[in-house]
Length: 103
Image (tube, rainbow, N blue to C red):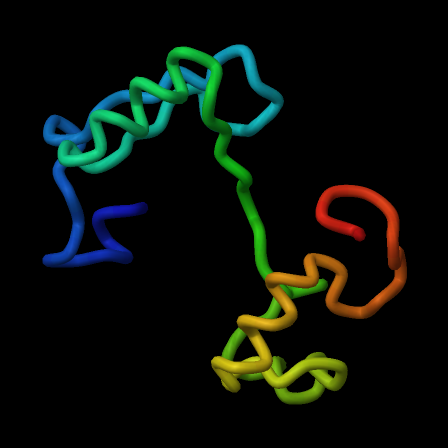
């Protein structure tokens, strides 16, 4: 799936540095990082780095046909707004002051 989506921009699996995520609760047991990111692989393997999946401002599944009707609380294509909302983590301000980055 990755290759078909990324097309010519894909990185062949054999060129990626493997990340063993088999002890995590994420769906994939392994994934890879770019071969120039050896320090990232090393930090992860040493337990000094983590990956956060699905980080962003979308609160539900969207596609090009329904995003206008479903995204009424954020400006999906405004870079300045998206930057601020990602930094805030809780874009809808439902959990202010709680959880990761909630201060």
